[in-house]
Image (cartoon, rainbow, N blue to C red; front, side):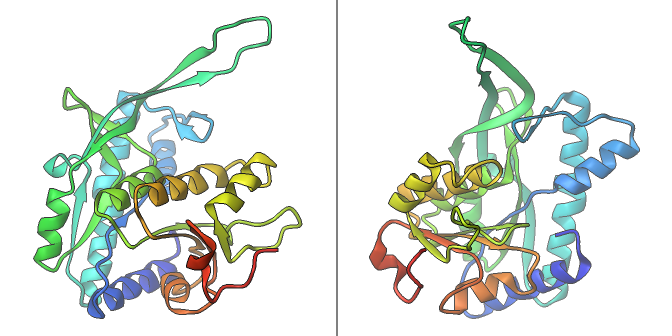
Length: 272
């Protein structure tokens, strides 16, 4: 979503979906924009297993970029194309309640206990309160959500956008969860894109380490959403113009659809 053309096409897709009766809820990230702002301010970025270590200085920038610049740009684009979008963060209406997320780092075989890594103001979702989304939906608005949560003491917490999207989809009982990324989708061990996979097939691919690295958390988000009752989940290449419409309205789609069982993959080619 750093390309002006792709951002424009995405906004058009959202407007069309709303027009024909689909009610999208958007959760966005903003990693490249955050990196650029931090660099300009002379603040060094640190990551642990793909998550940004977030101190007080960094969280101020994260909130400014996500809740301000990126969020309002998406809202403006949708509204400019005839839609009605409203930008919020997870702090609004207590939408996303969270706690500080700490990760366990494996130690050497000689030590029994893992080292606990404090990522700072990084959040782990404890509760989603979708009331504000239901209110916006009834009024015909498209919610655009910045992935920022609220801690028990009111502190701002930075949360991975994919995790937020999966939890929001689960809370509103969404028909679909669509994750837009910068890869084609899930590939098999020979590098072939898989159009459709079941939970069981995904589990096997994880076990065999075919699904790994940056794709693993995205796939796990899909599995969590399916477990919570979301009917279908998708991982699509956001670098393709009109990626949303191509995935939803064409038989084969452009990315990977992950579903509960084989019968939900009707019309898709058998994975190979």
